[in-house]
Image (cartoon, rainbow, N blue to C red; front, side):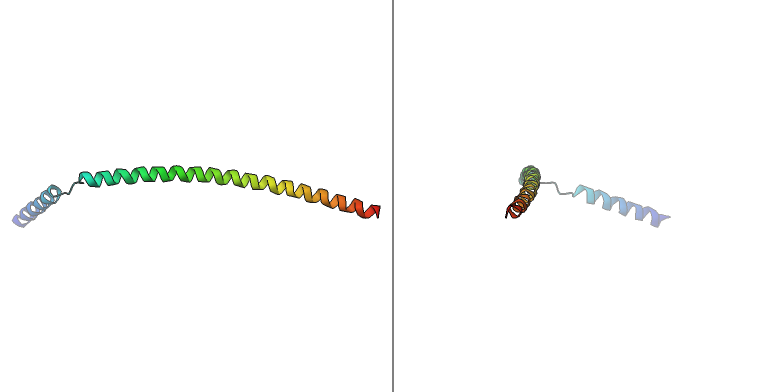
Length: 86
């Protein structure tokens, strides 16, 4: 029984010392963290803008591909008419 009491006392003392010796962030570290958070937010905004730009460009590519197909089809029709006229 005394060993349990001593063990509990030592454990309790260790916990108190461990919690009491916790290192807190310095003002400089907090400032660095805030700077990093701001940088992350800015980068996330840039990513969103680039994703929107990418979607816009993909839409433009799709429209141009469609126009190209239409023009190729029209070219083929013109070439067939020219051969018929010969």
